[in-house]
Image 1 (cartoon, helix red, strand yellow):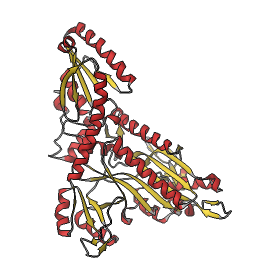
Image 2 (cartoon, one colour; image 1 turned 60 degrees about the horizontal axis):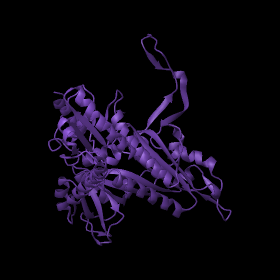
Image 3 (cartoon, helix red, strand yellow; image 1 turned 180 degrees about the vertical axis):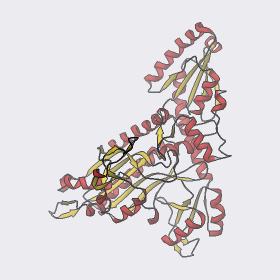
Image 4 (cartoon, one colour; image 1 turned 90 degrees about the vertical axis):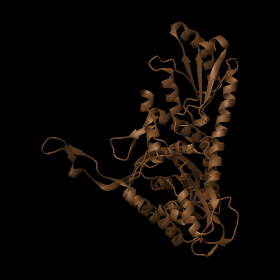
Length: 493
């Protein structure tokens, strides 16, 4: 009965419901009492922690350090950069008072009108403004540069339509904010961090991504250029998996952050910002998982190997456990996370289904016959295949198998993306093909007006102008005007 309760809606029947079911039933997250916010459960948070740890290492390897800045931002700060405030105004949560008092009827509490803030505070939607107001105190000379700072934090963007991990009113992320002496250094930094994100997505998440530049319409509010990585989900929709922004001198001018350069002249500082969020959890789920549950790449799986004993009587369990504990110690010594589930309150069949649902890459089962024969049954989650092999030396087989699973998951996602990426040359063809999902590569005349028309008529957006695109002069599929090369369109999350 417990296994039936865990069954998911089939993805081909209702992809959206399949996703929601999977997030909840795999114990990743659930909706909270606060509308639009989520509780990330321990198993979901364990995956996020592995993402966080790897990204943090990659940031530090490229010279960055962590700091922390306030959650609250004075409202006047947000208004200093015109494009920035316009981009975030509709999503801001505002603090107006700092105290409650008992209600006149004594049955609750009300806001104390006497405790109104002199200046209203914005709950952090992103930190450029509070950080650049701080950098003004840190930077006087070119010797103070560069500043390479990252913070791990939560942010609030008051979304009206929310979905666990993909779009919530509050979410977790990291945001890098760097300051540089020259335009060239800042641009190099923005591209460097784009490549860090790309490497992480492909090498750890096993998600192939397209690196590109956002169109002006899709650019981050306050940026001169936004670089991005775009991923393709199994339902044919794109997902923006990370962004890196070249901010020019916009925020330095807004907060008067100047430095004395090597020629002893005052100059405004150059800036970048870059971030990824718990939205990556949504990407991980939708890029790989199936109707049996999660499919996790071994590098990010909280449990890489689970071992389940199948026994009759206490004596047999003791004999199996002695064997298994030797293997557990060997695997731990190889830095493989392993769980021996010898709990007696669930049957082996329930455990098999549960660990499949949770995406554990490798499952071992050992029974009485295996004990006699010196064998063990090994199951790989990505292909749902099992085989019986010799127990001696199984740890080396597992190491190789984990690498094979990681590579296979990536290749499957890569092949799927390739199968749904195609060129289109006419707007009529575009309108038909976009309904099938996937990436459409098409010519565009470079104007916001044409881009807005395509979005209004088809719900597709320009995901990016690929960095590796070929220079291929052509004509815009909508207006017939000249185009320097194809751009990538898709419907997206």
